[in-house]
Length: 337
Image (tube, rainbow, N blue to C red; front, side, top):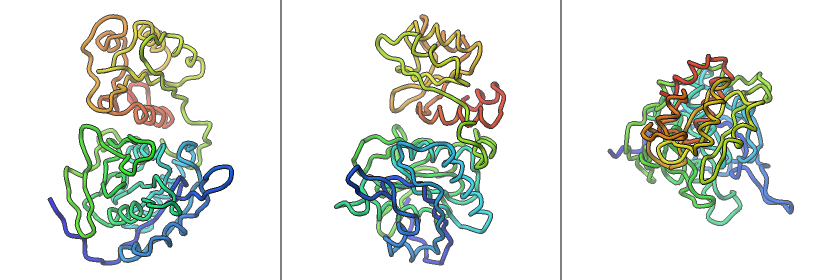
């Protein structure tokens, strides 16, 4: 369905800056975030045609060095902006963990306006930079009420649901994709085309706001390592994490299976911590089909929770935030059903 660009009544959009390539500048020792959010906004004059923009910076981190403290600060700014009357919120972020942050906001920051997370693969100063168009698309989506509630990612003229989007390419401009589902919407100069329901995909598994508390020390978040299964992986790869882990995510193969040795280690781990099993496949659900020591049926019988179609990274985010919020083990595991 094609929708004409909304009439340009002046909405208020709050921009929350976290850093990333979109805010980076070159340097002899390598590029790093240096631009404040208001500088990003001033670099795209057309944005002012769509909204009255307010800007707050909560961090200046590269995407590969993001932590839950900055994510929680962003969540607090989102809630405050909405309480102060913002019609939409845009979060600028590094692409390496942009999908993680978008998902965290989606499950622990329930607000009634569009929240759009964006960034860029190229800096503003680089030829062919995607920073201006991505920021403009994000603001356009933020003033479009059909994308509320919920969190989406704006990138390369597309809008993706936070739950589904993953970074698929190291430097391509269309890096964010939703494997098996596709984008929620596509933007042209004048129109927006909806491809599927833009409603919040995670509303049925939302976590309490305490999961992202700006006053919590970063070291106080639950410790959840991710363990990869593959050819020849043994149980020691999991066991070495157990003394310090509050929970574990096992990235299985196929439908959510593991080597026999890793399966045995999962059984032992479940005596002390919750274990969630995801798949390293890019699309499709996890299902208990196979027997043997590491097969899905055996893992299910041991008591693991399955991540469904949720990626390993997002399954870890959900487990971290659920445990950090103080939910019981049973309640946390139920969010994966």
